[in-house]
Structure formats: structure tokens, C-alpha cells
Picture 1 (cartoon, rainbow, N blue to C red):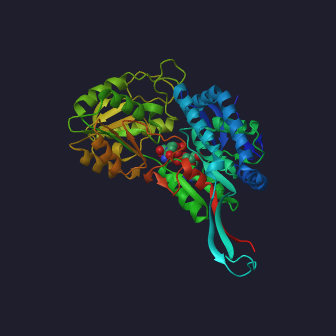
Picture 2 (picture 1 turned 60 degrees about the vertical axis):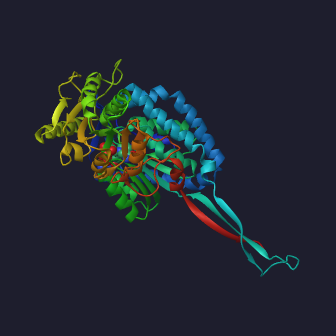
Picture 3 (picture 1 turned 90 degrees about the vertical axis):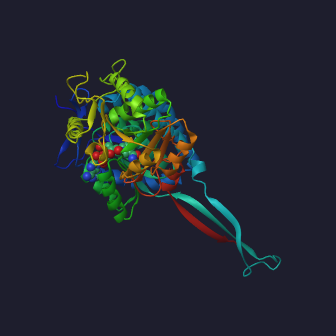
Amino acid sequence: MSAPKVDQFIAGKRTATQSEAGASHSVINPATGETIARVDLNAKRSAEAAVQAAYEAFPAWSATPVGDRCQVMFKYKALLEKHFEELASLIVKEHGKTMAEAKGDVRRGIDCVEFACAAPTLMMGKTLPQIAVSSSFCRTEDKSGVGIDSFVDRVPLGVCVGITPFNFPVMVPLWMWPMAVACGNTFVLKPSEKVPLSAIREVELAHEAGLPAGVLNLVTGGPEVVDHLITHDDVKAVSFVGSTRVAQHIYKTATAAGKRAQCMGGAKNYMVIMPDANQDAAIEGIVGSAFGNSGQRCLAGSVCIAVGDAGEWLIPKLKAAAEKIKVAEGNTPGVGMGPVIDDASKQRILGFIASGETDGAKMILDGRKCEMPNKGCFVGPTIFDNVRPGMKIVDEEIFGPVLSIVREATLDAALATMNKSRYGNMGVIFTSSGYNARRFKTHAQVGMVGINVGVPAPMAVFPFAGWKQSFFGDLHANGEDAAKFWTESKVVVARWM
Ligand code: NAD
């Protein structure tokens, strides 16, 4: 029996794809390689229907009091808690991450829904009474003239679009649409074609929570659907998360079409290890950062800079800790690392490992040789030492469980090496010196800094995004930036005769 085709979710219900002739994508379980669903890549007619539904829903939804809109979010948060295990299981199935990581994915997504419940406060405008006085038209008894007041409202934009990557199937969509919708916008979500099943369930649950039809729609598809959405006349804003190549394309195309855009791109994250670091905390933090989610995080630390003689303890301890990671299917007891997303990704990662050897890096731990299932898309934890800038493994995003170790004599040399990267998502230091930590935080050219924390993922109340080629735009995801991104300001100057 062939795998079922993934539905769209348009105007409040699941609907079959209105497909044109074109390619389709097989959604696989990366732990087994088995095809579990199919996605039409060229569902432009469905995309059109989704924008239309969002456009028609906008007047009523934007006029609904923000407190009432948030009541839906409160109910949605409760439903997500109720369906927590179900959503996490879907993530394990279509993405491959471990059950613990999948639960983290859902939990961090719920944080965003909770934050969206603060929309009444976040959308508040400002007022400045008596900015001027007008003497004309004033009543004769009013000797002081007529006061003029000014205020700024924050109002929703209209139809907004979100395009998401494969690596956090539930959380990244929740970075976008709950705040957009709580602010009064309507939304079309285009999830990664690799992980559409948990996203459609997430959208379905929002309707069970009481979201009116058309406020949130989901279309599946590939680049043609994306390009259709981001240039559509009725779309006002685009939020994107994915690789730098696509982020750049989307930012240029959407802004050229007059849309507001924020595009979070790829990363190559450095972790600087000082000789004075707490060794156990550093090892735990580095291993979690480099190999958690099989290295498929935009906050994955993929380069360690061992400063001074830190390498002497770092390398043997790191190797011992990484060797202990159990590589297996995500529900296996004791599992530490699941597969990577698909075979193409596995082959790309194996290509990077081969290039590390060819370029002369020293293999410390070979992830091709670790104990792991013999089917599915598995690559074990891999560590290279003596890596130098200019090698492919340190210059490019691998998005897999490969950690490169670079040696530098001083913190300043480490900062200089790190800051040469074209990416600037996050940087981490492990040290027991406040002076070193402060120096690192001050000079690191990145959007997110970790001090003795391997994955400095900001809570939803803080903005999330990098610098340089890790981000294209102005306002970041989450935090107060999100409420600003999803609203427009309107200034009023008022005089009452
Ligand atoms: P990707 O760029 O391949 O795909 C992301 C989305 O863009 C998907 O929905 C996909 O269908 C669409 N897409 C792909 N090619 C396109 C094209 N040519 N035109 C228009 N749309 C296109 O990314 P991915 O492989 O799904 O995710 C991994 C990447 O995402 C990594 O680079 C990772 O660093 C990045 N990421 C960044 C952040 C961040 O906050 N900076 C967070 C998570 C992931």
C-alpha cells in the first residue's frame, strides 16, 4: 500500500491537496528509512486557497478583542499539554530525534504559546497628551486653548506567512504563528516537507481550541509554493527559518515584493574552552551542544577552540564522553542520539568527514565506526583535532554530529578566529573567570552568547536570532521583537474642538 498523501489545512479543515502535476516528496522515518507519507511539492492551488481563506478571515479576527484572541491561546496551551506525548511521538517518527529531545521541542514550543498570551501587554501603544495647544476653535471660556494629544497604536498587518525548517518540527512553527495570530493577523504556515505531520497536528489542535476557520492555514510544498506565498499580493509579512542560502533568497524576494521579512539562516557555532574551565561542566555542555539532536540545531556548537593547554584535558575527556553516547532509534531506552534527517543528509555529513581526513585534521573519534543500527540514516559522534580555518569542516555548516577542535594560544586569538566566521548565530565560553567571560561576551560577534552553557537557547520572552549570515532582517523572532514584527504602528494626532 502506498504511503498516504499529507493533507493541507485550509479554512478550518483538513483538505486534500489541490495538486498540479509535479514532483512529490516522500516523508520518511529516518530511523528505518520507511516512507510514512507523501507531500505534493507543487501545491500552488492549495497555497492560493490558503491565502484566500486567511484574507477573508482577517477583518473579523483583527476586530476580535485581543483578550478574546488570547483566550484561544490559553485553551490551546492546555490542549498542547494534553497532547504532549502524542506530539512528541510524531516528532520521533518523522524527524528521528530522541523522545527526550522531542519532548524538549514541544515544551519550548509551548513556552511560545504562553508568551503569546501576553499579547494584550505587548501590543499596547503609547500616549503623549498635550503635545501642542491650538488657539483656534477654542471655546471662549477655555483660555488655555485646545489641547492636542498624540498616541501610537499597534495594529495587525493582515495575512502573514511562516516557512519552517525540519529540525524543530513543532517549536519553530510555534515561534511564529501564535504571536502573529494573538496580535490579530491571519496566517499561512508552510512547514518543511520533511516533517509535515506534527505541524498539521499542531494546527488541527489550534482549531480544537477554538481558533476560527481561516485564521491559521497550513499548506505543504517546496520552493514553488514558497515563492508563490512570499510574493503574493495579499501577503504582508514573511517569517522564515532555514539554511542561509534559502534565507537570503527569501529575504531578497519577499522584500523586493514589498513584504516585511525576518529570515533566520544557518550557523557555525564556536565554543571557546579556557584552561580554567570547570572540566566536568564543560564536557557535559560541549557534548550536549555538539551531538544533541544529532548536531542538527542552529545552536549546535560545532567548533571547539581549546585555549592554551585546555586541549590536554579536553580531548581525552570529550572522546570518553562521546563514546558513551548510545546511537539508536529515538524511543530506545538509554538512547543519546537518533539518526540524521535523511540519507541525503547522511551522505553530505560523510562527505564532510572524508574531507576532514583529506585536509589533514586528526581523527579523534570516527562516527562511521560506532555501534549503531545498520538501517536508517545514522552517523555516530565524530571528533577532529588540529583543525585549521580554511578546512571545509570548520568553514561550512555541517548540520550533523561532527565536532572540530581548533587550538589557539589566547582568548583574544580564539575570539579573532571565531569572529572571522561568516555566520554569527551563537558563541559559547567555558571558563571560571568573570574577566574572560565578560571579555568574550563583549567581543563575540554573535546574536546569542553562552557563558558555561552549551546551548544558550533564549526563552520565548527574549529575542532569538543571530548576526551576519545567520540572520537577514531587523526584528528577531520571539520576545518583544515578535510583537513588533507582527504589528504596524499607527500614530494619531488628535484635537477635539
Ligand atoms: P532549508 O533551508 O533547506 O529549508 C527550510 C524551508 O525552506 C523548508 O520549508 C523548505 O521547503 C523551504 N525551501 C527549501 N529550498 C527552498 C528554495 N529554494 N526556495 C524556497 N523555499 C525553499 O533548511 P532545512 O534543511 O529544513 O533546515 C536546516 C537549516 O535551518 C540549517 O541551516 C539550520 O542552521 C537552519 N536553522 C536556523 C535556525 C535559526 O534560528 N537561525 C533555526 C533552525 C534551523
